[in-house]
Each structure stands twice: as C-alpha cells, then as structure tokens.
Length: 133
Length: 126
Image (cartoon, rainbow over all chains, first blue to last red; front, side):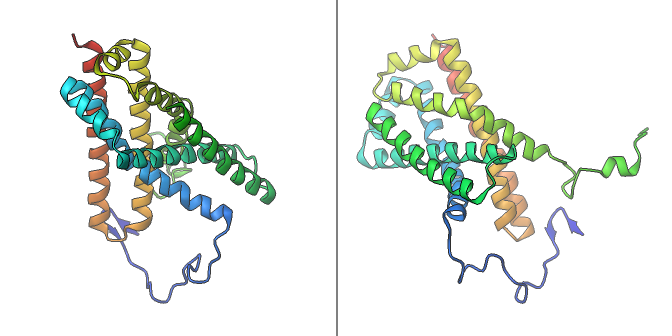
C-alpha cells in the first residue's frame, strides 16, 4: 500500500537495479530514449525564453528592444541553437514514439533505422532553420 | 447512487485510478504539437529580426494569435505531463515529490497564463 505522502521504502541495498549502469553498454536505442527525456526537460526550461519574449512584447517597445538585443548576444544564440536542436529532436523522436503507439516499427532493424532517421532529420531541420533565420 | 459493480469501477483504472487519462492526453497534446511546434519555429524565424511594430502587427492576426495560444496551451500541458513522470521516477522522498508536483503544476499554469494573456494584450491592444 502507498499513501498520498509517500511509498513504503523497500530494502534498497540488496535489491538488484536494472539496467545495472556500471556494466551497461549504451546502445543507440537506449541512448535516444534517454535523450528524449533529457530534451523534454530542457524544452520545459526553454519555455521560459518564449514566455520572456511574449511578456516583453506585451510590456512595450523598450522591453521588446532590450529582449531582442539580449537574444542577439552570442551566448543566447548558442542557447537558442541548442533549444532548436532539442525541439527538433524531441519532435522527430516523438513522431517515432507515436508510430510505436500505433503498433508499428518494433522490429530491431526498424527501431535502429528510425533512430538514425531521427538523428539525420534533427540535424537537417536544425541547420535549415538557422540558415533561414 | 452508483449502479456500477465494484469490478466495473476498478477495471482498467490501474493503481493511480486514472486509467489511460495521463497517457492519452500526453499523446493528444503530442499530436497537436507536431504541426504547432513546426509553425512556432517558423513564426520565430520570421520574427527573429522584426522591430516592435512588425511583431505587434503580426499578433494582430487572429490566426497567429489563436495558433500561438493553442501552442502555449499544448506546450505547457505536455511539459507538465512529461516532467510529472520524471518526478515520479526519480524523487523518492514522499513530501519532496508531492511538493515538486504541486510546484510544477502551479508553475506551468502561471507561465501559460502569463504568456497567453501577453499574446491577447498585444492582439487586442491599441
């Protein structure tokens, strides 16, 4: 049984962990899975930039100009490049997940092929965005 | 009065008593975000060098304003569902987990409201 405020802790020291991280060899598939969650967390934090930009626009010309100048600095451009790459990765891999939800693409070779396709699509979309910007 | 049997009430609802509610809304917002996030990036690219007047004018379009508010709703809903699971998986102290979940939900709602109201202010502003 578990209550609202916490679960009864099992004996953690003796319980085996899976996957055993010290001896676990990361494959493309598991790496991409971890990356999906990682980019999801980064994108959640990155929404703050979108909120900043919209709030600055609503605040008036001075706040908007200051925010635009801030987004133009080199370190913000690096951050925005990372944000766009994370977004395109999460988008492409999310579509891969939706196909799995529909029961498609579970074969190992298909899982690897779609994994490489996601990486290539992420690179192409990110570069295309920054060439267009 | 509830005419459903005990088995009917519990069947398919799982330990969280929510059934597939979380899973389904995560997928629903994901499907919505496929076109919306592509549109959002295109919009940001178009407005990246825009001055104040151009940006304000862009948000005067009902289509742009509606899509932006829809995108914000889907983004914050999806983000909250996703981070909720991360907290469930990695925070093992009961009260820390509960506090983090409440803070996450409040933060997503407040940030989403702030962004949406900012859009509407620009859309309806003079």
